[in-house]
Amino acid sequence: MPCKALILDIDGTLIMHGAPCASPAVVKAVQAVQKRGIPVILATGRTSFAATPAILGGIRPDYGVYTNGALILDGAGKVLFEDFFTPQQMYTLVDFCEDYDYSLAFCFNDAYYVYVEYQQMHDIYATLTGHNEYVLDGEDQDRHLKSMPYAAFVSMPLEAVKAYGEKYPGLRFTPYDPTLYDVYKPENTKADGLRRLLGQLGIDPADTIAVGDGLNDLEMLEMAGCGIAMANASDALKAVADRVAPDVREDGLATILNEIFGGEA
Image (cartoon, rainbow, N blue to C red; front, side, top):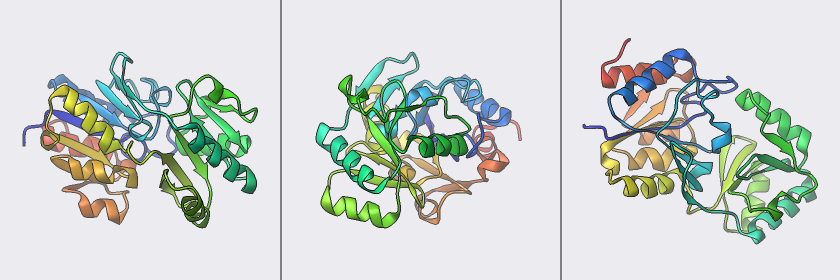
């Protein structure tokens, strides 16, 4: 199939969990695709300040769909789309997490601000991503007075997620692992953001290749002409994928891109 855009998740796909940046082999393979004139689009739960060229190993994406679709930027950082939590969505989440001491971070346009249980979340980000310099103490709970957040990240058990959803419907919780969740508006999935962007670019989703490993990549892989799950992905994601790439710990993204585009083994 002709590929008019390559769509990449970051954590568990482009970068190994806990690693500070993408490996040289992955960087080389992604840049080789760009040299062919094919735009590379990031589609991630991260926001732009957590996906800098340094973190990406030197990769400079042509576009980015960030915070699970709530923020879309071009390669120069121009905002093409953004959507925010409503005050009610934010306040109810804060109140619930404060009642049970669940660590809660909100993704704003300049940093992650932790409104509940800062130290715990600060440590979580260091373990998951190798970075926590952009995770700030927001327990004064006043950052939203400047602008509302795009999304949130919370540490809570599954039963609490279910209880919250029953009491306050309207937000989507997607597991990053069994006790950590991306929280975002249901209309702002990665697939939704990609459809908005691809529509602006005049690219049919059927002419794209998308690679991911998480449950927040499921609709994205279903949407793409060729959906590729990493070997470290869940069985649910592999079930909807057209192909499975080797594990991220084995530079699986580099392997599958070189295979598809004829790069180095």
